[in-house]
Amino acid sequence: MKITIFGTGYVGLVTGACLAEMGNHVVCVDIDAAKVARLRGGDIPIYEPGLESIVRRNHASGRLDFTVDAAPAVAHGEVIFIAVGTPPDEDGSADLKYVLAVAATIGRHLDRYAVVVNKSTVPVGTADRVRAVVATELAARHAAVEFDVVSNPEFLKEGAAVDDCLRPDRIIVGASSARAVAVLHKLYAPFNRNHDRMVVMDERSAELTKYAANAMLATKISFMNEIANIAERVGADVELVRQGIGSDPRIGYHFIYPGAGYGGSCFPKDVQALERTAHSYGYEARLLGAVEAVNRQQKTKLFELISHHFNGALAGKTIALWGLAFKPNTDDMREAPSRQLMEALWDAGAKVRAFDPEAREETHRLYGDRDDLVLCEHAYDVLQGADVLAVVTEWKAFRSPDLAGIRAALAEPAIFDGRNLYDPATVEEAGLAYYGIGRGRSL
Ligand code: UGA
Image (cartoon, rainbow, N blue to C red):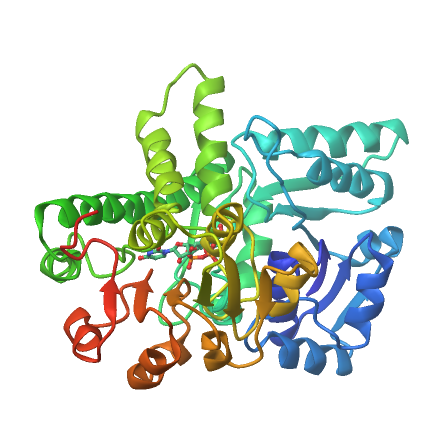
C-alpha cells in the first residue's frame, strides 16, 4: 500500500520503517530539512536498537523515502499518518498546534479518498478536530473529496520500539467508518500473528485507551515507589515484597520495579494531560494527581540518600554516576531522574563524573561544558577521584560490578543503588555501604 507519514520523530520514523519492512511504499514528511537530509543519508538521529538497519535497508530498496515536500506526499498516501509531537502546554495540556497544522496541510492538498490516521498521543476529541480542519481546507478550495479520520494510538516502548511495532500486542483502531476500518485491516493484516490483534472502537475510546494505558503503568510504578518508602520506614525489603505480590497473576511481575522515579517523554506528560482533560470536563482526577506527586518526590530520593550519607555536607564531594538516560537502551534524557539528581548535586556544591553507554552526547548537548560535570568514556573511569557511586539507570553493563575495584577506587566506599540492582549483603561484604530504594534502611 502507499503510505504517508507526517513527523519523523520516534513514532513516525519507527512506524514508517516497519510499514516499509512489511512491503508498503512509505513517504515520511518532516519540516526539518536538515533532518530529512540526514535520514536520506541513512543517519538516524536517535539511538534505537535495530532502527538504523531497517531504515537503511528499506530506503535502499526504494520502499522508504523522506521529504520536506508535503504536496506530493499527500498525493502519494492512501493512508496518511499524523505522527508529530504534542508537547505539554504551560498548564500540562497537550498542545495540538503541530497536529492541526498537518491536518490543514492534508486538507490543502488532498485530491482523492484517503484515511487520515492520528498516531500521536492526543486528547480525547482530537479526531473530531482534525476532521473539522481537513474539511474546512477542502471546502475553502471547493474540493469534493471524501476522507476519514481514524485514531490509532501507538504503544511502542523506547529501546524496544522496532520490535513493539513489528509484533504489537494490540492495534487499537478508533473509527466510525467501515470503509476506513477495511483499509486499516488491510494495512495491519501482516502484523496479526496467530490471531487478529486489531481492536476496533469509536475514536474517543481509542484516544482515551492510550492515556489510560500510560496512566495505569505510571500508577503501578508510583504505587511501588510508595510501598518502597513505607518498606524503608518499617524495616522491610521492598524487593521481597515485589516478588511476593508479583506472583499473584492479577498483579503480575511487570512494571512493579521501584526506583528513582519514572521519566521519559510519555508518562509525565500523559498523566498530566489526562488530569487536565478530566479537569476541563469538571472532574478532579485525584489518583492521577497523586501518581504524579509521588513521582516528583521519588525523583529526589537518590539525592536525599546521598545528602544524608554526607550529613548534608556535599560541597567539594565528587559523585560518580552510572546511567544518565531515563531508561536503558535509549539516549533519551527527557525527564530523566539523572537530571534532577545532577542538578541537585551541583546546587549543593558537588561534582559529578558520569558514564552512560549512549546518552553522553545528549547530556553534553543539554548541559554543555562545565567544571562540575565530567562525562567519562568507560564505566569505571567515573570512579577516579570520586567519593561514592550512584546507579541511576539499569543498563545491563552495570549488573555485575567489580565491587572490589569500586571499593578500592572510592574515597568513601558506598553505592547508592537507584534501581535495586544489587544484593545489599554482597555489597556490604565487599566493604561498601549500600543504599537502595525501600530496602529496610530508614532515613
Ligand atoms: C511508555 C509505555 O511503556 C509505552 O507503552 C508507550 O507507548 C510509550 O510510553 C508512549 O506513550 O509512547 P517509554 O516511555 O518508552 O514507554 O518507557 P517505559 O519503558 O514505559 O518506562 C517509563 C519509565 O518508567 C522509565 O523511567 C522507567 O525507568 C520507569 N519504570 C518502568 C520504573 O520505574 N519501574 C518499572 O517497573 C517500569
